[in-house]
Image (cartoon, rainbow, N blue to C red; front, top):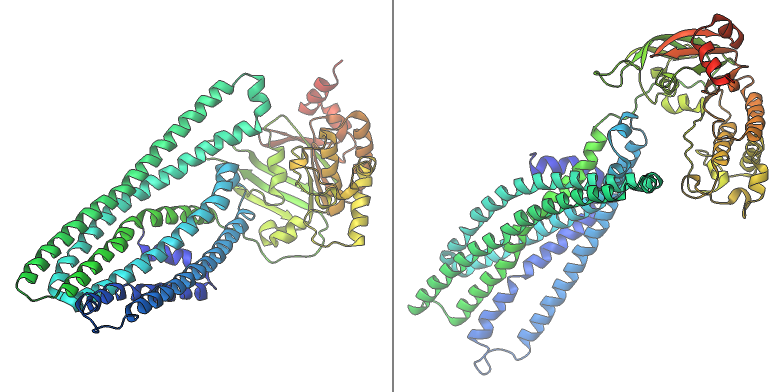
Length: 578
């Protein structure tokens, strides 16, 4: 397990600019700690002189007590507010950094982690972990300063008796160190168990229709209970490890105080100490119990806070941010080349693409067909660098993709997939996705895109027109409307290269005819890659590429491939068999 210093140095950059808040918190804590010994210090003159007539002013001690607690109150407020300001600013910067990396991570991260896992890490773990860690560290500083202040007072009052107290600290340190290691292990296990439980919920939310249709609710309920029980068991183990520190520390403290009291009473019998000195010393000893107790309990929150934050940092470290070059020509011509490209998702699986070489001319319409798993989607995902080839090179306009600026590269592509993703925002904002500019010209482009996708009649019937919100992932739209809205988004983007992955799959016959006509107009002068299982939609493509098991096995026009009598002809025959 890394040292505390190493872990703090890893987190510190995300709390840049929070020094003023932490400084105020430490200053307030230091003032509060410095006032602690003043309470027992007031006991000595009060007991030794206060009950002798005229020896002590009637109002002196009350005024000192009121002033002391007023000062402690101001110091406590300053510490609390300064820490809250610093903690929330640091959390904001940390969460923003994690989310920024999330939006630029290679696609493999999204196959390794469930959505619930990522949401839990970015939103809840970061917030809870950072808050818990910062407040626990402040408690550590505050209680440590309080212990130091009280020990200094005790040493000044009676250094011999104070030596008995110092035996307490190595013992407490040993207990905290041993139990902290176990607590860290249990915290990590608890995080994993929480993810597994959240994933069960996520799956059942997404597949609620299937669960009900197949009567799988009892099985899923049992699955949920098993994961819940495992999380409960781990939480109890964490509580046990954390709670064990307190009674052990209190027992050690009680032993030290008992020894001090015996020694003090023995000395008082010899007449070496006054009643006031004895009470002041015992009071300071009693006040020492609370910060020592807090120090014994702080290991748990600090461990859990570090574990939560480090989880987000590990997510950032899991894969490097996407690296690209500086090449940005503005608008590409649209010439695509694949040179002996192979790709393995995993070493123990067959290649998704195997030595594929392909050249697409600017403005050419190329259709990709083949059985499921033949490599069609993998091929087009290489172009915007959603995935990287294992072997070979992909070029755009003669430049390797790695030389392109990543943002400039992706500006060249518009994608319409069979899996349409929409945001819970207005129709207009979904169409102009990624365009921060809001103007009359933008609105005109949105309307033109909607018209081109045959959606104007639908939009005009909405309560607020293009400003109507469409619900979570377009839940208030039909499948055909969602697909056409994705097409409108592609029309709006006006990129030189189009990737159409079953772009008309969710449309009825009439809508398909209208949208297909719009797409044919849109595709003119643009390089188009079209994935389609319905071969009737690609008969007019300039060239059809047939893939099977990751290889290109045929290519040509529709007529040429039918005449060839190969895989394309067999697929065509199966679809149009009467």
